[in-house]
Image (cartoon, rainbow, N blue to C red):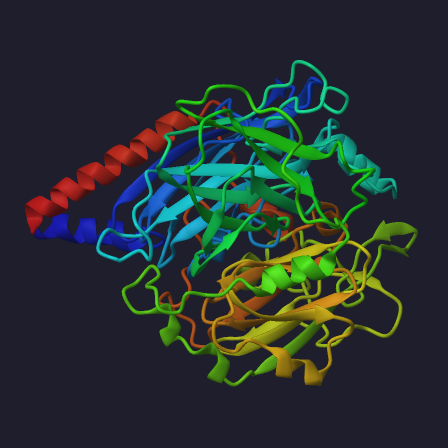
Length: 585
């Protein structure tokens, strides 16, 4: 019996990415191409388990998540869990700087704990511009039942993905970027992978499948909305209904009413919506382009239907208006500034969110990151961050550290934008473990930008027009700025964030605009505990993939291996182990 106990303990110790004391959730993802016609034109899209968009991942705080991914595409694949902090395990983040690609016909299992988080997020394929063809889905983290929620339990929970869409697939769009071209205006906006309801026969052709959300009159629902698109900011609204903002990317907000809200690329919000209108007809759900020429972009509008169970007819007439001026950036910025953190609410843990007084922490390092319009570097059209166009390493950053591979990257990312000519480099930020970093994101382009950082929820403390200066700190919100993972930066403006670097690993800091990201507008922040141990950062997983300088270490995988058998074996193993542990206690 003692030997069996030792073996079981060894098993659980080696399963370092998940805690045996917490429940497990299992998902099996088969990623493949299918043909779909979201805008009425047959095209190749990326589906998960034959579905576009993919299934919603629904877990509870501190659960261990096991996702076995079978890559049936014709190119390498990684899935990124946007906004999931991957505490101590950047190995599971699913980005080019942290993971080797899953080769075609292979399967690979992600295994991580959704640690101390709640909220609304999404996942997507992070390589080769694949998100432009789909492969995305919602990711919901529910609070534990013992933790109070700052609103009454809604009747239902509804996930909605919105995003701009092209009828060309990702390989054609990628080629256009490689050839130095702009992508041009998208062909439409999808709501849950479907095209617009035919509200206007001139703008919307016949035969397009549209999204219908059925609700019961008088009930309140929680709508979780994510902009999973390529580069277009969208205004979200529901005809005749108020949107009570309740949460954004893991933080409960001060509850405020909005008739519409701008949701920028990569951002997620939760709204409480009460179905308090009469049912004389259905109602429009609208996602329309923002900060663009409204006349030209009029056809780039997503339209779905909100259907009451006792509705008496179809929605007709004009769409509900959005903000009066599509170019009115000031309206949008003031709206963004109005979003506040609910500092009296509990988050994933019972201690109040407001107990973390970020405004009184001393900043240890400051980085001003500036993006500009695309430039030519060595004859190729590229985007830059502070004058550097990022080159993804062939060997992932922490894997290179573990195996002492030299020359993979440089820890020399500039704290201020370069003054010389732009250059292509694998230059990353050397973050100080337990430091408190201030990052100013300066947008000197004419396009809206969104920025995301993996591994953390940062504090969005300020934004304004013009160039950021030291005096700009006087405008910061040092009390209830929202904690989130994606922030918008308006054209000719700046946004400031504060980050507590308490999560060791290599973490991606990038624009969420897919075209700018693909062309080099990103970097990584490497955070290493100088006292190396497995308490603050786990080592590489047993199934780690090798590539680049370490490719010779990669063992071949049997092409006939079954993803389903793999994950079912994992399920059975965990159940057996749990039962045996109960018997031994």
